[in-house]
Length: 141
Image 1: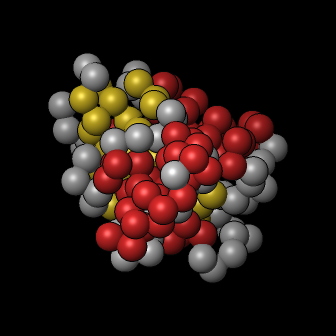
Image 2 (image 1 turned 60 degrees about the vertical axis):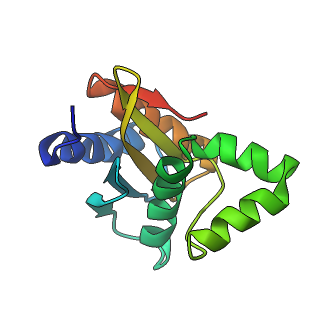
């Protein structure tokens, strides 16, 4: 299964609905495919100007390393030089904090969601819930 536009859009729309249900601050959500290509980017009114890049950085870092961004965050604390090197290879676009969640189908990575705007923990929870609502497996760690 590939992540198609319909599924990516559903996940992104669900992120906005879940964020409203959770009472989150305005969020930006990026959904990318397994190759790191942007499928959907939604930015709520009231978000700051760098949020699209942050959301994509969380998602792209997860796909690029095959790890949810929470795991990347933990690894950055344990092995900062490794994550700094990966960020250099990624052109400085890796955002190693929770909120980047892999989308899996039958164990295979088919994409990722990156959310920013509220606390990293809330961003991650919102992404996981939306992925699971689509019948897919959310892998934040």
